Image (cartoon, rainbow, N blue to C red; front, side, top):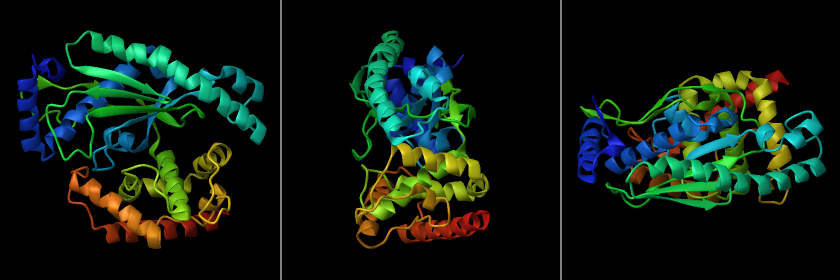
Length: 341
């Protein structure tokens, strides 16, 4: 019977990661973090909380769909607003506010309830799961994020920290979503060792495309990064296109409209000139996926650092090629969305 990876002593875990790295071509420190990502998903979704959670974002595209070839290190989760704030949803009749004043009331309630729920429900769940092991792991709670800090036995350049961040949102239902299987990147590469597996509810990739495309659109209008590794969104969009998911997303007007309405209500943004960014324009023939001038240089540096630390599985395409492909996707999307109008 195979021995569980996380039950091995540090030396044996290091050896197992070395074997997996040699056979898979992936850096050992990324394989190690991936184990913790999957363990986290397993712990969350095998609990009673799983019925109200949806796994989303780039990590879901990598782990649940196998669409992207980059390493995805953090876990984005939506906690169904119907579970967090049933009083607000029942009063409205729909899981989205109808006015700006309602939106502010919902946001205030979520902003207060979500951190409290993480601290009193999620953190004890993870602490209890870790209590049954001798692993040197600690938990940190910061607002809508819970960090699982582990003692790394493999190291990289320092760009990827030995910490899994669970980032929670609770302003939507996370739908459409369905259950999918998730395994570790090291799985099947090491004889006699078993790695964690999980079965999370996962946001459908068509909605993830629109979530990422609208985030890129906002960056192009603002010329401002939101944290490091933001360049991952462009890589992901290209991989979604290669998998045929972009075509399906463009044909699904209802999903595009749902994303635009939700972001317009909860995530109002201004362009660099101070003008409100209209998300509906992004789904109606004016989508922008390739930045210009200063924004291009900012993004290129972020992409360079991603590539240097091995976050992309295969040889990464040149930055200029990536931008050209994204511009082509935007052109195709805009023609198709105009024809649907």
